[in-house]
Structures are given as C-alpha cells and as structure tokens.
Image 1 (tube, rainbow, N blue to C red):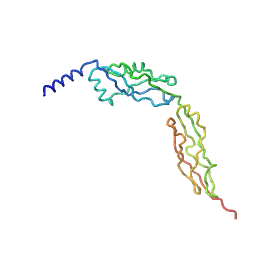
Image 2: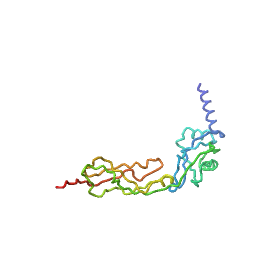
Image 3: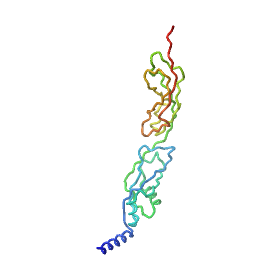
Image 4: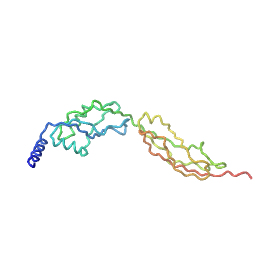
Length: 214
C-alpha cells in the first residue's frame, strides 16, 4: 500500500512540474480612469475570467489561492466613448502584468462599460418658513438659522443637472411653542449614484407668544 501511495505522489508531483496545462481563472481587475471627471453609471466588474496556460504548480496556486492573486489594471482611456471592454487590449494588459503564466484570452465576448461626466452642484438651503406648524398665538421671533447653509451634490451629469439650485428645508414639528433647535434629515438625494456632502442640517430659531391686547 505504501508503494502505491508513493508512486501516486511521485506521479502527481511529476505531472505538476509539466507545462501545457490550461485553466480559466478569475482575476481581480481594477479599472483606471479619471474619477474626478467621470463616474461609472453601472457597477464595474470586480473580476474578469481569463484562460491561462502554465505549469501545474502555477495553475494550482491560482485555482486554490485566488485571494492571493494581485489585481490587474485596465486603463479606460476614453470613458465617454468606451461602451465595452476591449478584450484584446485587456488580454495584452493582463499578459504584461501576470507573471509565470501565459495569458491566452479573456473568456467573454463583451463586457459592458458605462460612464458619464461627473458633475458637482452647490445647493443653497433655505428654511420653509411658510409651512411651519406653530401653536396658536406663537410666532418665530428670530432669524431661522440653518447650518450648513449650502451642500454639494455630485454624480452623473444627467442626474445632477436636474437638481434645483435651492432646496427648501421642511421644519418638522406640530404646534411649535418653544425655542427650536433640531437636526433635520435631508433625504432628497437617495439615488445610489448621487452623493451629498451632508444629509443632515441643524435648524434653530426663537419662539415667542403674542400677548393679548389689554
């Protein structure tokens, strides 16, 4: 029995030392582009499947220990005009970065890309004083302070350009009869592709009671 196991182990080790094996491997990929000017409109793939050839040992390491595989870079040169990944260019890029293996081809006919120009808009925050629910005979007796006074919203141009320059902040509360100092949630920008510099604002003001005439 021991001889059989030794022979099998010898055969396995000998086989792993040989070249010419092929395997489909998922490689982590990092897309390089100017993220100050462009924003992806759909999730970029985190991995790409590649057919590679090499020795049994090298392929075994990539198939059993994929978490140790370093990311490969793919440069998106013209984001607004590249709707798919150029698999030929990616194959060349992978071949330059992957060591100890021969890259044969990317296992995909098309890998879609989508980018838009990144746009940033500054929005002025104004308290909606016309729709406050005050208790009878109580009025606001000071300026309504809003902090911050402005926020920025950024994201794809087609979404950001439709956002007004002014946002009226609704002040919650019924029958307000005391000085007000609250933090208010702004949930106007819940689209997953939009990012606001703040999602809460502080609103404060003083309240007084109108005296009845004597």
